[in-house]
Length: 308
Image 1: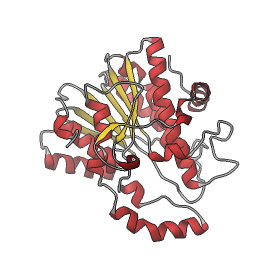
Image 2: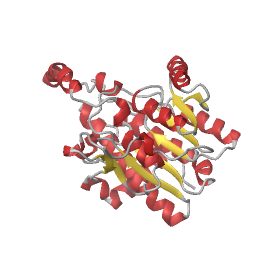
Image 3: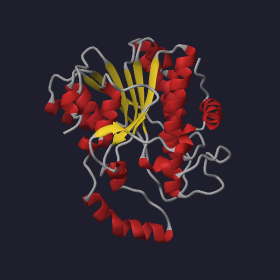
Image 4: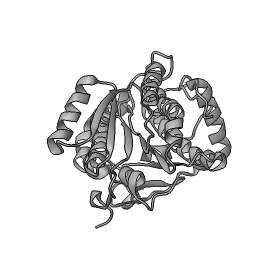
């Protein structure tokens, strides 16, 4: 039968922060953690969606320790404000799940900070958030940072000269690049944690083929690709997993005593599209230590942060 939410050990006394937790994978992750006894911060960019997510969660578990906090990962000011609020509270963070994302808007869009939208939301915002929350993560020995990557990470190389897709914007290719960057970030975080004594476990997970909101609303593209997607989407969604089962690799990484930093988790079925959660194959591109170092240094500069 494999690993399921029944196997989640008690999370009582742990504080978990889940980004993009108002729906899809993020909500299912937050729900399972709260069910296991964790105190959960559901972070998202929409107050009304946050209120609805909390209502859904408490309808299942009226005594759950959960709250919503505003966080727009496309805005570095919002990331800073969220982190400062958490730092002011002073409570150590046991688990940070970097989940929020957008997928393949048809046209290249810029954030308030002037970054390409997918790069900012999926990757750079999470990088800056993790850096700013580092003191709270370091205060809990063995805290975990789980970056939610994607099978799309195996489709792309990382162009360190064109991280903003200024030369060429192909919606789904850019999406895959951000997910590859998230995976590389997780692996590099583990390496730096080990060398610097941070006692943080950096790891990543992917859901396989999941019919969540991000799939239902995308990917999008232009021309014949957009037409093909409109035709194929209803068929593909019919064979995809719902968010609950798809969140299991994330939950395994977040909670299993056997999970370790520097590893990548996902479904273990055919081509990792579905199946019980377990170890996933790390794309060769994600193992380039030199590129990971350059990406880290570039990200610190763009995000205005330092992992000190």
